[in-house]
Length: 330
Image (spheres, rainbow, N blue to C red):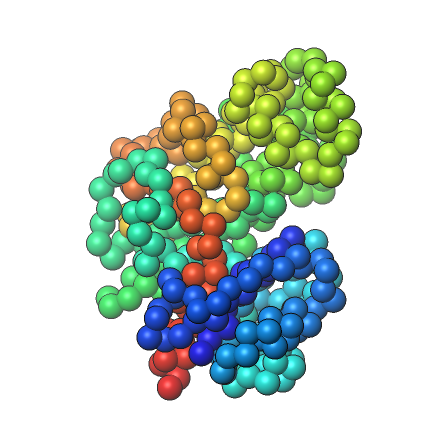
């Protein structure tokens, strides 16, 4: 049996899968607060002890790059190593997978119920698929067709340069260059980036900050959900401008990724933010920004675009990747 995990800075989802049941039907599943444990080994040992199933392999999707069989997670002091996990958990094999690669691994097995269609487009069989996921940070990955199956390609595209596409965004970049040595697209297209956009509009005098909002933000550990909700309801000019700019930047970056990997198989919006702002994504900001690519606008307008609505997609993808890998080894 396979132990699969979606390992994040806030929470960790673990589940056990059997090959005959597949990656959509976990035998047992549990969620843990990541920060309550000193390491993934400790957390996974507790889970495996309580379930008492004959697990021999593991595959973990982790919120960070995987290099030389090692990975670390942003906002969590865990350093994970495949050999150490294998030894401590008494398993035959352990695979660490970037979380966006895990999400990408699930794309070929997602059902219509897992997706919300933003643009039906014209899907090309065997065409590359792109996934862009704004959550706490910004993740990007893509899949390519080898003639018989899709291969996952991880990336750290979220740390590429932010490319403004409007005069307001040029001013936003200038504002952030005074505060950061490097302004990546993640600085403005993620949960951590939304407060940066808000600060820009506030400090530039775009509108006054409402007193009720100032109180909420002062008391909040994370201002992003407050800003996003106020932007969705439309009862705060600053928040509405922030959310609108965020969606425009997301559309432009999704279009950039679509061009770079030629994702005629579809563009998928993952992460924690898109499912929460679907009405805004369906508005007048996202698609115009996505297709605004000069001579290639017509091509981009024909690319299918989906919002991934299933919150367990990364776990499902880690299970799919792990089951396929270990079945081949067997």
